Length: 273
Image 1 (cartoon, one colour):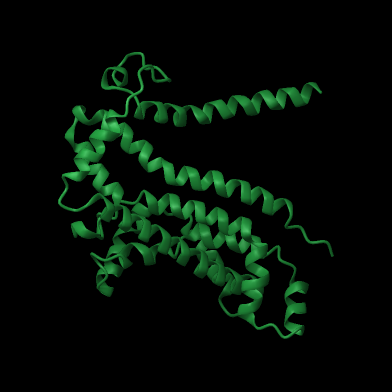
Image 2 (cartoon, rainbow, N blue to C red):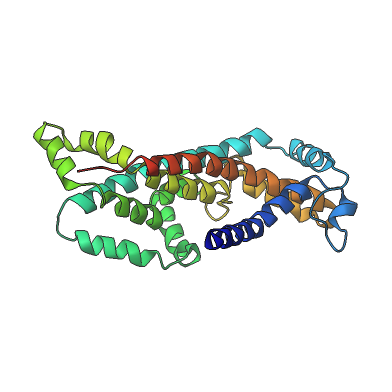
């Protein structure tokens, strides 16, 4: 009994510790400038205002590229990149996990090695490849590299390894072709994995500026446009707080919704032989 109470207290303390930045960011977005610059800073807003958001939309409305265009670019890149990652990574992981072919183990080892390199290390090679393909200043320069997230492939492969080979063999005996096995048996069983990969991918693509690959203002992403607003300096500190909350909303909502589905799926995905 005492041990359970101690564990609950520790979990509660960690929960408060990790929730503090989120609560602070939400409150900061509704603070007037005098509260934002208050020292020592206060966690909760005393005189909430929508002025920061009003200023944000006024500034964006004066841009010669519409605010909706920036939103479309980011949503399209995020959706296409995430869909492609889940599709190609899961298909590749299925092939490597369940079928023996020359170079399969070496390919998996190579993917694991790439987990050690950050995006800054591969930025120049990525740019050279995109330039060679003629994809600079296009959506493809951001979407296609997103298909090759090593963490997505690794996580999906680890889950597919747990799928019983007997289940796949039984489907083959019943006459199911490879793609049907992949779509109707493997994908539903690894739902926790691809939901998790989806969260990681959306978080990365939703916040990408893509300024190294996209130069046309019509194709620029929402984070880039909002980042330009913050160049205004101290006077736009309140707008910056609104920008921070605005960029947090989509990944946060997606995580909350997907988290419940992941827990539910993991609780009911066991197979009894």
